Length: 311
Image 1 (cartoon, helix red, strand yellow):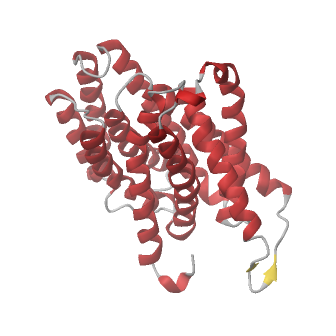
Image 2 (cartoon, rainbow, N blue to C red):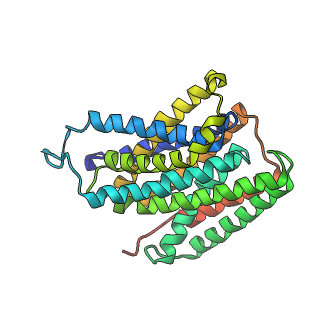
Image 3 (cartoon, one colour):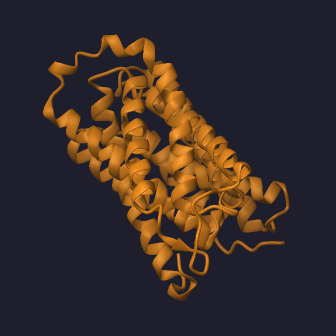
C-alpha cells in the first residue's frame, strides 16, 4: 500500500476482506455438507493457491522498490512465509472445517473473528508490547466470561446436531482463533523483505500442500459427479475470493496498519456472517449463546480500544 493513501485505503481493503470472510463461513458450511471436511478445506485453499500462483506469475515482472525488478526473494523470507502458512492456512483450516462438520457456521462466525483479536491483544499485553489499562484488563475478563457463557449455551442447546457435537465444534473453532491470532502476530515479521502477494502465495501453497496430505484418504469418498452446481460455485467463490483475494488484502492491510489495528476490523465478520447464516443456512442460537456473543463483543471492544504501543 502506498503511504500516500493514508489509512483510508488499507482500511477500505480490510473492510472488503471482512465481508469476504464473513460470507465464507456459511459458504464453507454448504460445501462441508456435501463432502468430508478435509476435502472441503483442500478445495478452498488448493484452488486459492492456484489462483495466487497465477496472479504472482502475471505480476512477476512488475517493478517494485524504487523501480528495480525483484524476481527473487531470499530463501529465509520464503521459508518464513511458508511456516506462517502452516499456522494460518493449514492448522487454522484443519480445525475450522472439522468444526464446521460438527457445529453451525453461525458459531464459527462469532467465536473466531471475536476471539482472534482478543487473543492478539492478550499476547501483546503479556509480552509488554502494549500497555495495560483497567479498561483493557476488564475487557479481556469480559471476553473470557463471554466465551464461557457461549460454550455453556452450546452444550445446553439441541440445535446444530446435538449438545456434545456442537460443543466439540465450538472448541475446534476456538483452536482456529488461536491459530489465526498467531498468524496475524507473525505478519510484520513475515512481510519484512517480501511483498504481500508473494508472502501470501507462499503461505497459501504451503498450507494447501499439507491440507492435501490429510485429504488424500477421504478423496475416494466424494461422489464428484453427484455434487450440486451450488457446491461447485461455492467452492470457486471460497478459493478465489475468500482464500486468494481476502488473504492477500489482509496481509496488505497488516503491512500498512500493523497486526493490532488490522485485527480490529475482524468485528465486521460476525455481522456479515450472522446475516448470511440466518438468511441462507437457517441457523440460529439460543438466548444463552446470544448473551455470550454480546459479552464477547463487549469484551473485545474494551480490550482493544485506545491501544498504545510501549515500543
